[in-house]
Image 1 (cartoon, helix red, strand yellow):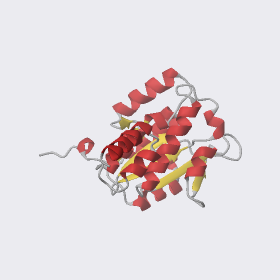
Image 2 (cartoon, rainbow, N blue to C red):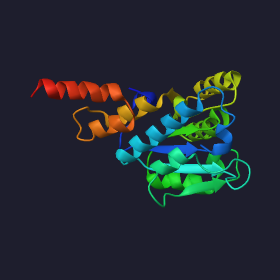
Image 3 (cartoon, rainbow, N blue to C red):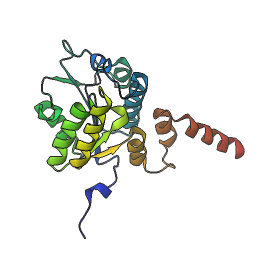
Image 4 (cartoon, rainbow, N blue to C red):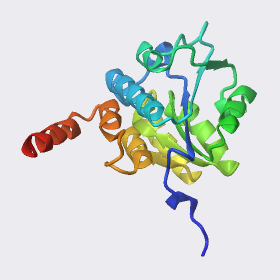
Length: 207
């Protein structure tokens, strides 16, 4: 039977996360999602990934000139001293340092989020897929500058065989089991207060 890579689950052993250009300057142009929601979502995704010991590769473009630093909410989530690769290539996949960082993880499934969706997330995702990686884009942890860019970016991703998802679904897929000791912390990282509330109600009921 032929193995379908789209049916191979993301796990804490096979996945890495690539965050591309979540920079202050680029956020000022985002129009397809509110800046507050985008900031929240990418910070939550990074926090949950780190909780699950997922390797996280972070990159910017021209941070000292064109697009500015990482948004502070994401920077605050990253461990002290976590490397941010500042590059000039449009496609992050074309920077040897980014490629080396991904390859060093030993993971064959790459989750990607970026600003903009149709370039910073899509280009490396399509390049990774072309080289045999399982590529996933967290759409709600990415953003772009118009509805048309969002629509065409999503179409191009799907045409290239990239899996599109939301940030929380990716994290929960890797968690895999709600009985896992880290489950309450992961749900808290994802900022899903309804899950915490249900857990609190269940605990109170069992007392």
